[in-house]
Amino acid sequence: MKNPSPEYTISPSILNMLVEQGPDAILELFRIMMNEAMKVERSGYLKAQPYERSVERQDYANGFKGRSITTGLGTVDLSIPQTRESGFYPKSLEAGTRSEKALRLALAEMYVQGVSTRKVSKIIERLCGLEITSSQVSKASLCLDEAVQAFRDRKLGAMQVVWLDAQYQKIRKDGHVCDRAILVAVGLNEKGQREILGVDTASSEAEVNWRQFLEALASRGLTGVKLIISDDHAGLRKARQAIFPAIPWQRCIFHMAQNAQNKVPRNDMRKEIADAMRRIYGQETIEQARTVAKKTVEQYRKRASDFSSWLEANYEDGLTFYAFKQESWRKIRTSNCLERLNKEIRRRTHVVGIFPNDASCIRLVGALLMEQNDEWTDGKVFLNPKAMERPKK
Image (cartoon, rainbow, N blue to C red; front, side, top):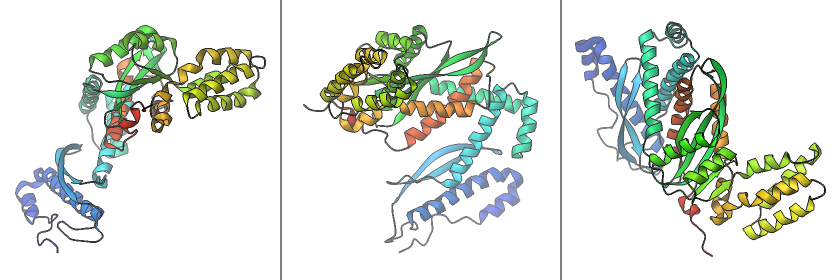
């Protein structure tokens, strides 16, 4: 039986608002129309009207969640329809949010390239049909800086896993263009979702820089870490041992395989060595992996002595993941989740070329990471938290 008063009826008083308030009523009308449109969209998604009994119904309405969005007319407070179990999100709002973010990032990208605010205004007006003043452009950059800094300084909590990695961006420093390290940390929270924990620029991946970065994470409340995953960079290794000496470390086996292929005497052996590395870390138990590793060391003593010596000294670093439940192995034996993130950052920063300073780089990279963090923490579980428990023997 349908409710006689549908949830999404638009009041006739809307026309009266326009008559009495004129253009000043537009923002309020936009709020009303968006709220009603999202409720209609939710009913279509549920395949049932409010309070309707239907065999086609696939979920139930579950109230509303407040959210503010910025439009060309100003800030609007909307009521986002929620559902009880499924991941419904209004497409109309999603499209509007993407457009708003794209505009902010376009301003930031042009700003960091040194484009004058007057030129930015003309470009945005031509591309988007919006008239923006120079002061608005400067204010948008300042607002983005504040948001990124708040994100970077936010309090952390218990994280079961921490992935660490770095990439390099060209940044102008003291009158010279330098390759500056962008240090990034990603965590696995207690819900099994990934979070961006930190990002910073540094002159290099030297121990002192990684140590300062890790100390900042600890001071912001990072606790409960059961495993750290990273490549075996000397500076990172020393800093990790100094700040988190008791936390087990998993060396990324993807990077290990790349390192191994650089130890061969001939290029035509690279695939053979890659296959050998996969066999070692593809075993069902740590004992089997150690047995295969030792056999591989002996197998290549004469054919590839550099690889054999390197493997003998390093294979144990890649075995830490065996201490956790097997369902977690694929996710915790590499830093591939960070590799994909770094690839996306490089793709988006490529248009900038050379950043004028560290702040401009952090502004853009930080904004990208904030968007990724929102997607991760609003999305599905990356790894079941129980998978990080030690298996019973």
